[in-house]
Image 1 (cartoon, rainbow, N blue to C red):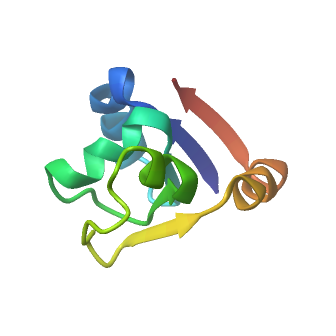
Image 2 (image 1 turned 120 degrees about the horizontal axis):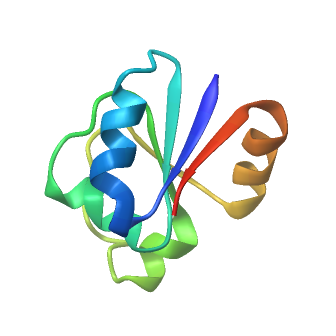
Image 3 (image 1 turned 90 degrees about the vertical axis):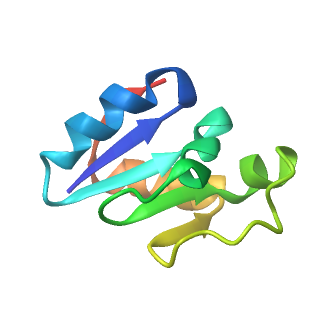
Length: 87
C-alpha cells in the first residue's frame, strides 16, 4: 500500500495521482481537510482529527469513506507503507 499525504495547495494533482493506485490510502492534513467538503473522493480517505477540529469542521458530516485518525495513527501508517507527499 501507499500513503498519499495531501495538503490543499497540491490536492488536485495529489488526488489524480492517487486515483491511479488501487491500494491508495489518502491522508488529508492541514488545509487539505477542506477537500473532503468539496465532493466525493474515491477510495479510503483519512483526515487528521486535530486538523479538522482546528478548521471548525468537527461537526461537518463527511462521506462514509472518510476516517478520522490522529497523528499517532498517521505515524503508524507511514512506518508500514510507502509514502508519497503532496504538501
